[in-house]
Amino acid sequence: MSDTMTLQSIDSSPRASRGTCEGMSVSFEFFPPKTEAMEATLWESINRLAPLQPSFVSVTYGAGGSTRERTHATVARIVKETPIKPAAHLTCVAASCAEVDAVAKAYWEAGVRHIVALRGDPLEGIGTAFHPHPQGYAHSTDLVAGLRKIADFEISVSAYPEKHPESASIESDLDVLQAKIDAGATRAITQFFFENDTYLRYLDKVRARGITIPILPGIVPVQNFKQTANFAKKAGASIPPWLAERFEGLDDDPQTRRLIAATVAAEQVLDLVDRGVRDFHFYTMNRADLVYAICHLLGLRPKLEKEAA
Image (cartoon, rainbow, N blue to C red; front, top):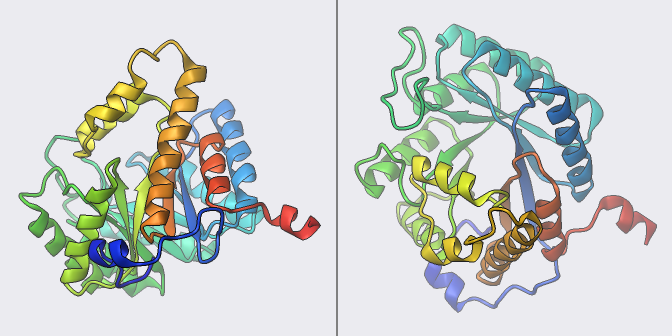
C-alpha cells in the first residue's frame, strides 16, 4: 500500500487489475494450538499457505504461562522448519517488565526479528478494566519503547478503524497510534472490519496526521458467523446488517456457509484491490482453505507452481 494512499486518491487512481499479484503482499495470523489435533490443523494450514510466500506470519500470545510456552514453541518451529518470517505477539498482561524483556530476548536469540507489540486483553476478559502488573509495562507504547532498547526488532502494533472499545474517540485513538510510532513502531495492523469505507476513511485520518507507516487492513474470513459476531461485539467492530442477512438460516448448513464466507471475503478483498490496496493481513483462525482461495483470487500462486511453469 502506498504510504500516501487515501480515500480521495484511491478514488481518482487507476483501478488495480484483478488477477495480478504485482506489488501484492500478504501476511497471516495463527494462534498456538492447545491439543495435538489442533496442532496438526495448524501445521496443515502453515504448510498450505507457506508456498504463497507471505511477508510474515504472526502467532498470538496469551497471558498464561502455558500459552506463552506454546507461542514460543510454535514460533521456534516456524523458524526451524519453514522459510517464513515469524512475528511473535507480545503483551503487557500479567508479567513484569523483566519477564517480558526475557521473552523478547529469547525470541531474538531464536532468530525472531519481528514482534507484534500489544497491551493485551484484561485477565478478566474483554470489557473489564485493564490492570497492569505492578512492575510491568502499563501500555503498549511503553512495551514498544522497551523492545527498542532490547534489540533492533521490526515492531508492529494494532490500529482500530472503528476505535478501540476503551477509547473516548477516534481522535484519542489516533493519539495512541502516534505515540506508539514515536516509541518505535514500524507498522500497524488493523482490527478486522467489513465495510471497506470504514478502513479507507480511517486511513485518510491517519495520513492527515502525517503518519506514513504501513497500515495493513486486517481481514477475517467468516468461518463461523455467530462466533465472529460475538467477537466483533467485544472488539468494537461493526457487523453490518447485510452481512448478518447473508448468513441467516445457515447455522446447520456448513457447506453453504463456507460458500457464502468465501464470496463475502472475496468481494471485500477484490474491492480493496480495485481501490488501490496492495497489502493484506489475514486472521486465519488456523484454517487455510478460505485464505488460500482469496490469495488465489489476488493472483498469488505457490512458489513451486511458478518454478514448475
